[in-house]
Amino acid sequence: MIRNKGISMNSLLLVGSGVLILLISLLTYVYILKGVYGRFEFSENLSSLPFGSVFKKSEEFKIAILYSDNTEVMLPEGSTWVNDNVTTWKRFLDQYKLPYRIIHDSDLHAGRIFENNLLVLPGAKSLSDDEVSNLKKFIERGGSVFATAGTSSFSNNKKWRGWEFFSEVFGIKFTKEIRKEEITRLLTLRGGSPLTANIPTGYPMRVATWDMPIAVEVLEPRTSQVSYWFNYKRDTALVREGLLKTAGIVNGTYGTGRFVWFGFELNSVVSSQDGNIYLDRLVHNAIDWLLYRPIVSLQDWPGKYTAAAIITPVQTDPSGANLLAMASLLRSKGVRGTYFIDPTLSENNPMFVKQIAQKGEIGAIVDIGYLASVNDTVNKLNDINTQLEKIKTASDKLRAVIGYNPSSILPAFGLFDDRTLASAAKAGFKLVMSDSMLDRSVPKTVIKGDKPLIICSKTARDDYEVIRDLGLVQPEFQMYTYNEDIEKVIFEGGLFVFKPHSGLQGNPENINVLSSLVDSLRQRGVWVTSVEDLHKWWTQRNKIEMRVEPRSPTRVAVTLSNSGMEVMQGFNLTIDLQLAIRNVVISSEIIGTPLPEYRYNPQTRKLDMFISGMKSGESRIYLIDFDRPS
Image 1 (spheres, helix red, strand yellow):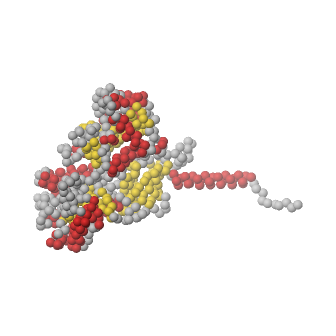
Image 2 (cartoon, one colour):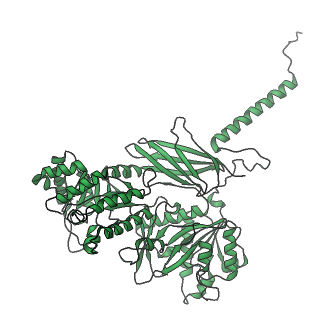
Image 3 (cartoon, helix red, strand yellow):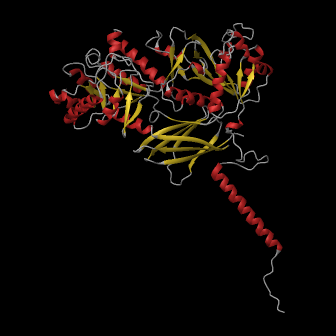
């Protein structure tokens, strides 16, 4: 019998090898966790491990809707007003897949609310003193409240309490009720707010006045104004005063909690199909903000600009001398204006057209038929074949002189239809100018065939209104009025479209106002641009798709993609992280991805990212890692 002699295995070596393999496995696991979830540290209570998140899932939130029995008692017998408002809120929360429960005044009175993250108060006009006290404590201790209309303006015994709750908790001052003389009233939304993210800047929501909506003025810096009721065509107040004293939506903080207040009930909003989409987005954004969920938005304008402007003079003087003078003045100020002229001038006076083209861009005035208003049933625009022929002929005439396709078209009588847009796109135009107000104060992009076309509406008064109609012949009065409109557009964050006429603003006694207007725009940090650059920026901007996703308590991922056919130049993103954080670092999942410049503001808790550019079809995922204050 032969005994095999092998290498004897030391038990200590065996155990040591197993421990080493275990440690390597743990380190590999930790490395993978850090790669997926970002920063975390092992601690005694394991609270920093990425198995949970400060960003809760929808089913983890506790939301309560107050069914105000006290308010219902105040109403006429048989009224379903309170029930209708609560039902609407239930529909919204069901749509967002957010859990909720219905509470009553007795619950709020007894303080059975403090376990909730969000308390919704639809039409809760009547609250007892104890309810008001508990509501204040709820927000002070970190709760969030979504309130509408005249919250707590009556006591539980139907006596008028006033607006003390508004001033103390919301930091606002009641200014007026919107009366029922107007069946509906427009409420204009500002840009640059997390509540209006991904809603067109200057979008006017149409609100029915049967409940007499409320206008307020913001008194404290902890509260932000999101919208205004002011209408400069109907209201007599100065523009800036009218903007500031007619807030219809505000959001802010009280103690360690948050609030959003709408000066109307959701049932009062009268919307089109697009309007329903934007109302839904507005409410969803507001709830996300109240629940501290991150919100990402793409800034409207490049760089640090918060508003933009184009200047588009129209020839109305027969000789064209005034238009040429306007073009020379604007060129001396470094402004590339767009000059609308009658295309027949290219045949009658080609030298004049060439002179204008050397100083700016050429736009075509085209007669496509006449409508007195969008509701005109007597007059009509030309059929599509006639419109296409006229628009294409205008383009051909101008191109024969200036050597390129004109970029803009102005219907001779201001109004147009979908046939106009299709014809303009087919003829190679990039912008259609409208004399009517659109549903926004930024360009509207439409796609006709495979060509993007932008529509710019009237966002400011022109010289016909200021000089001809108001009779403001002194330049300083003209400039004062134009400055009011500039402030309105800056307040919204939109596009200032100034359309002077050569036969009025271009007259020698008025023309220098153009120089003052350009100076005023630049002093206020407005991007004064051309139609060509505006079209390029806006059509590319609208091709950027984005999404923000929490990965862990210390990591958020932002996904960007450029679905356009062109390279997108530099643009800014704002991410409202809703968290107090420090030591922010941005990386990418894919090695070699250009990293953005960024700046975090600890006061606003917003992260601004500058993306240097994106190729057509390119997608990126940025990982935002940060530390939480201990």
